Image (tube, rainbow, N blue to C red; front, side, top):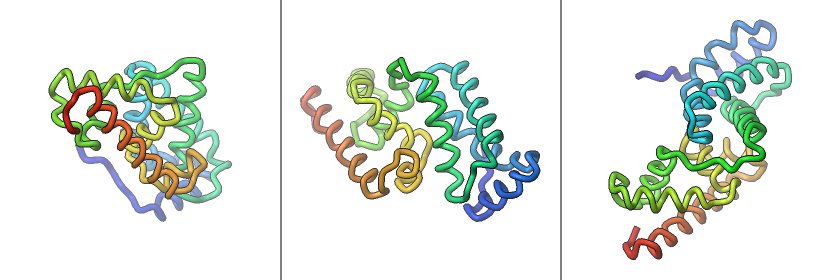
Length: 184
């Protein structure tokens, strides 16, 4: 499937136009729907909840267009997605989805995640992480945001995000090696 794309400058221009005519928001929806849905699905692990949350994210984005003051559209939209998911699950601790585990394993050279035991080990490690660290993985691996975009959402510098992600992956790799007795 071909995902529509546009330049950051075009995205900003479209959002500015959509502030006057809400119907012009459609191209932003088309560009970001799959990524926002994937983010919601991996944060919830439930198709129905992901659909509902994705719908809520775009409803809030459309309703909040007047609050958009420029900047990276992906960061603005995923800030809304992040806040929507956090609000929805404030009292719950989200479980790592299998796709999230596969992405972490692939990103971290944890070997063949088709191996059930490897998968299960990595899933346990990811699900045991604090919410902030799981959120960092979700924004980076699931939503496909770069460190600058994640930084805007989590309120840190891009360098801090890269360092935290590097340390997190290093920690997961070390824990995996300790548990499995195999190098990651």
